[in-house]
Image (cartoon, rainbow, N blue to C red; front, side, top):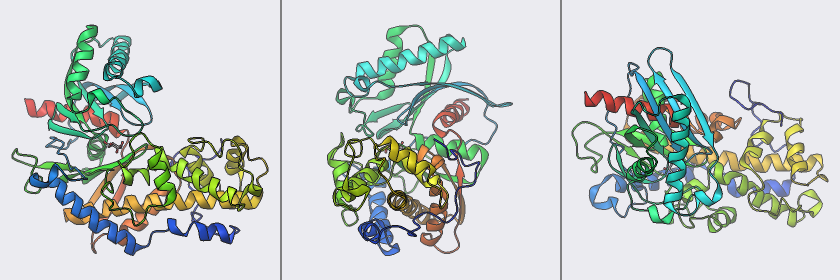
Amino acid sequence: MSGCKSKICNPPIGVSGDPTGVSPEIIEACKELNMTNDQLKQYMDSLLDNIQKGLKKETNATAIVKCFPTFVQDIPDGTEKGQFLALDLGGSNFRVLYIELGGQDVQKFQIFVIPDNVRVGSGDKLFDFIAEALANYANELGVADKNLPLGFTFSFPLKQVGLEVGLLERWTKGFDCPDTVGKDVVELLKNAIAKRGDVQIKIAAVLNDTTGTLLAAAYKYPDTKIGLILGTGTNACYIEKQSEAELFDEPDRGSGKNGGAFGDDGALDFVRTDYDKDVDANSLNPGKQLHEKMISGMYLGELVRLATERFTKEGKMFGGQASNDLSTRGKFETRYVSEIEWDPPGDFTNVKKVCEKLGLSQATEEDYLNLKYICSCFSRRAAHLVSAGLATIINKMGEKTLSVGIDGTLYRLHPQVKRLMEGKIKELVDPGIQVKLVLSEDGSGKGAAMVAAVAAKNDT
Ligand code: GLC
């Protein structure tokens, strides 16, 4: 597919949500996707209330937004050195990484596709798969016997009780190995590695991808205080004062983590549409992660598909003829949304390809414009919701200037998300606060090495 896939090229300016040439009935039907600032502020009040409950000891157990402490007490200062291994589980790919910090930073990795019957099933199978991938790659690189420190990026809700101990709360994003819920995932990994006996490593830390993202960005931009993932899932972590983070009992500073789980108590019902309810009802975790399901890459394509399918069946698009693929769950990939929005005004290259792929070869120019408009309405809603989430945290932190380190496929690949976020954050933060959005280069990989490195420094 043509179209620019990285932020290096200039995205088409000012076209997101352009209604020119779009059918009035499609514009009308998409109105519910346009969130006003009043609605976003209502959302922010409710999120703040949830974060406060998550931070407090007496309310954390029942809080929807858990704000688990990360046990990371320092951010890197650029002097970190050494060789590290990292595992990254929970994004679009599972990766094993080798990272050298200090001097010329070196990073190598191998991607592994997790088969469906490993993603959903017994925990043994999943952790054996992870240990095998780690052992094979470490052996290939000749570092299997070096006892290197390893950072384990495990991007699912995890109740950390230490830097190297994390109890799994629940699975999200299409994973489900029920026999591991409540268990320490570091212990599960250690056992799977020990069973094999062909790789020596020291697990230095388990972390969420948002934590890695914060740290990897802070290595380059020292004023980074928030890490955000906008990828398969969405979540953020931020540096919180010790006095506020009641779950973190040690001296110094704690960091709080917020969650894609917001809305699971009905707080988002005032803006959830039929499409959101459908996506949720057909997921592996109905009733959970409702905020994330309105925003992130795992769901955005499906939301667009559901709306497009409905409008087609109502005779508003594609001559009323839905193809098999348009009527099949999961067939409208989220990357299509980005690709379609990369088409400059008047150019239908990508949207045409997507329609052909979906068996909608009868599409007219009006259909292309309608489909692009639908994509832009869902992307804009996602960008605005994420911005409102960030603005809530930023206003709570009370810093006057800060950077937000961001990673994730949706943020990287979508042509308009960054611009939309910059605009909306400005509108929603308290007067006088300056916020910069910075790309965090491989937070889940490099960030894991940073956490391991910072931990090693604190050990000495
Ligand atoms: C999901 C996970 C969370 C992770 C986020 C981004 O929300 O539960 O832990 O940070 O996805 O990958």
